Length: 171
Image (cartoon, rainbow, N blue to C red; front, side, top):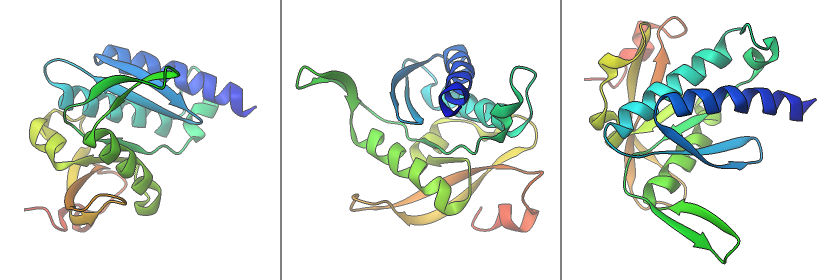
């Protein structure tokens, strides 16, 4: 069932997120919001995202169905505020939370799995990505509800994209 698949997937994601210093803030339907605190938050988020992608891209020993899931991960780095909303739920709010949500939404449109904002790109090192991965710049993107254009970055599995595609827009 879908609930069994999500339970298995989210258990693996929780292990990966925790390993990289993150905390699951909440589960929203079939999505998860994760926060990272302390030093190297951008790098930790990027490392967790690539590991989650690898886990879902390959058949795993734990559950072969996890490999059949298409994921979308949006990463944005910035200040957040933890708050209680109407004494119903505790959550984080901030511009980067909205940017990350919009980037996650763009993954399906761009047929990608991981998109990050420029702040995350500049605060992390793409040289620390696993072998076979690189960042491809996608300039001047509009994000719904935000009055600014963004340079965003697609984390590419180089075995699945041509060098021409990857080098397009990269300096």
